[in-house]
Image (tube, rainbow, N blue to C red; front, side, top):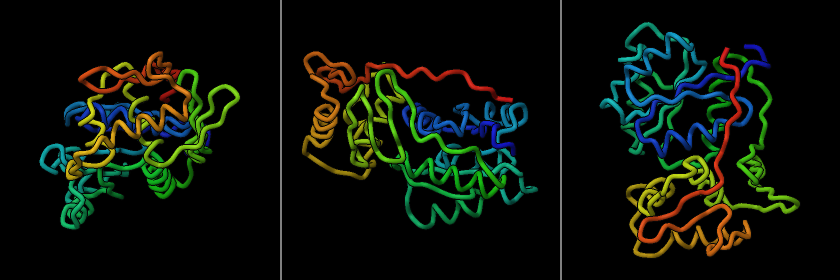
Amino acid sequence: MSLETPVRVLVVVDRQLVANTVALTLNHGVFVTRTVHNVFEAATLLKEWSPHLVVVDMDLGDGELLRQLGLSHADQRSSVPALGITRRGDLKTKLSAFAQGVDDIMTVPFSPEELLARALVITRRAHGSVPPLQSTIRLGQLEIDILNREVRAGTSTIHLTSIEQSLLYLLAANAGRVIERDEILDALWGVDFVTETNIVDRHIRALRLKLKDNYRRPRFIETVPRHGYRFITTFTDEPQSTA
């Protein structure tokens, strides 16, 4: 693989919130992504687009998705490596995923930096090399450095915790959409996390404080009463070559 060639990643995830977050995370100068939500679309792009890596939701299609796409060990082994994601983090699920043909498996929720690191490792292992990582991406007025967990806004540099970075990527990846508190809780803490506290609101408040974002006149994170939060600054991805 040429170091100048963007790494093509096919994201096969039917949950839009997760799919958008995966796509934004992989937009660090190394990867160019296309997202599909069903087996038919995935099979078509595998043939027409020839991705270097597939990120596949192992909970989609009762775990038979790899077989249906011809990426299973039961068939002739495809040259396309696969990174699986799942909400079920038990050992049986992970062993089953490896038996079906994934090169690695991650449990949802996961941090953006973990996803990026594993995608880089799998791609390098399968193809020998990858283009140099660009640690920063620009989201409107913000520049996010995933490597150092920093956000630059003008002349200010803000240091984020891991959960704050995950929250920022989740919101920014779904800019313009209202994300309910339960969706944020599910995406960042998992479906089994039980709490009666305002943990989501507290982390939103902490992130706003670091961004110097006034909730009454928000520049980045808007509160939608009785619903949740919306990221205001839209993320525009400059078209990249998919050759």
